[in-house]
Amino acid sequence: MFWPTVELAAMVIVVRGIGDVGSAVAHRLFTAGYRVVINDGPTPMTTRRGMSFADAVFDGHAILDRVHAVRAHDLVRVREALGAGRAIAVYVRDIGSLVAGVCPTVLVDARIQKHSRPEVQHGLAPLTIGVGPDLVAGRHADVVIETSWHGLGEVITHGKTRPLSGEPREIAGHGRDRYVYAPIDGVFRTKARIGDTVRRGQEVAAISSLVLVAPLDGVLRGLTRDGVPVAGGAKVVEVDPRIDGPEIYGIGERPRLIAESVLVAIREHRRSG
Image 1 (tube, helix red, strand yellow):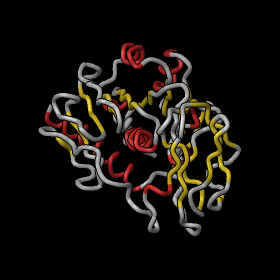
Image 2 (cartoon, rainbow, N blue to C red; image 1 turned 90 degrees about the vertical axis):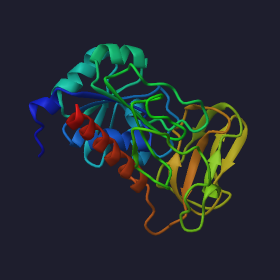
Image 3 (cartoon, rainbow, N blue to C red; image 1 turned 60 degrees about the horizontal axis):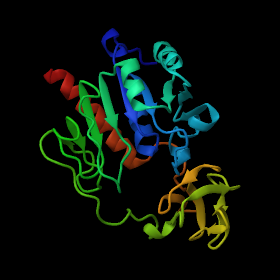
Image 4 (cartoon, rainbow, N blue to C red; image 1 turned 120 degrees about the vertical axis):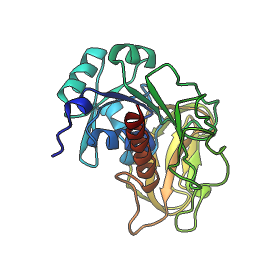
């Protein structure tokens, strides 16, 4: 077991976003010895729940690659979880109250906001790191991390990350066609589960009276949680076409590489400081 130094144990890192990338970042920083709290909303639309800590928001706890995350309902419980150091704390209230309550040394915005204007993170912590497209180092955050497969994981201290472009990376010959997007705003309803085998055209979920079907044969890799309000156009279902050896649990390759880069950025900042 890794025992952190006193210096590391005194550092609190806030990670914004409980999707697969944010969860991978939180996981890597926690295993490196830092105290970590994830911040997100009370009903995240995360689809890759087997590859993230997202279910901790709903169930109170989740495990990802042998690391535990627990939902902390208030700042008292956040501090208790951070002090114990046995699990990642998950806090689903306002980011402002969290920052004021725990005074993080580092804040990482790993929400990967693809279709909304990037938010400026400066001032939320002594070191801020932005993860995602269209981010400018020194403007949106002190450091930004490239998330495109072209240059994936590049730590940028001067310059910007690539704009959102292109298609998803193919899996077994399938790209964007393996996803289902919400056709309207509404409450997502499903009786399916992550890991279920599905056939093309099979009913998987519904929003109001609109039925959503599997776009191809495969295994459910991504599935928004039942009962979560979703916005029209949001990704709600993902099918992995690999019947043999689908990747539906654990930390994926891209999130892992991004997480390693975040850790490198923090360590380089500490050495230079």
